[in-house]
Image (cartoon, rainbow, N blue to C red; front, side):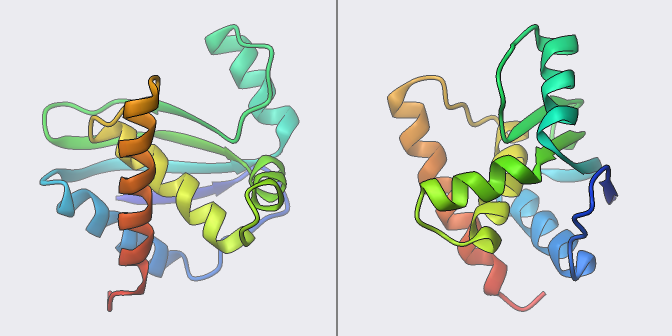
Length: 139
């Protein structure tokens, strides 16, 4: 099950469409959907999590806590709407495209993809694009 939670004014339209798309991402990676919670928040909220749990004094667009067991994908994904908006401008893309990229990014980490090295980042970016393109399939 995928749940969407809001700690900011942002509301994801068409939650059922997004949930169906995210489940298709998981299935396309030969995984099974467990329990995933998306928590949409602001920079301050996510910065506090970053400091408390990761001891990182930086702003970020996403922090994910992975509870995956075997092939059952589960976890909590925190997304700063402020960072996503700024990144959309910085990356010369739209907010809807960037929010999909970040949402897919969290799932891809749970599926085993990393992004610490340049090679890993290149694979992650390609996977993000592949999964964003799946958004347009009939759900």
